[in-house]
Length: 93
Image 1 (cartoon, helix red, strand yellow):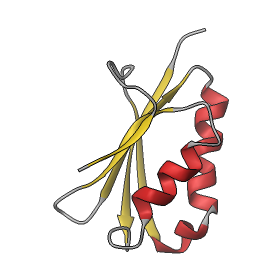
Image 2: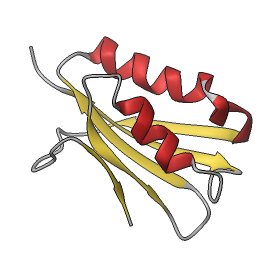
Image 3: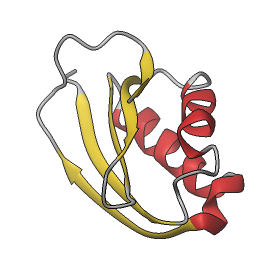
């Protein structure tokens, strides 16, 4: 079974609210690899992959169902090629 990888952009009040740290904590409960970072335009970008597309979907769903959900106004999600050279899940600065 191949990998599933997604790039997600979150818009809303998503910077300065512990968004990246919460995403990293949530990622700890799932079999996902990837990273999350703040963008200069005020959005947050997430790239994540998993061996199991259902696991990846569950992770992304958990983010929206978490305490962060109220801060997210818009989610833009794309399938992307597998991430390379990624270990674990990290916050990129």
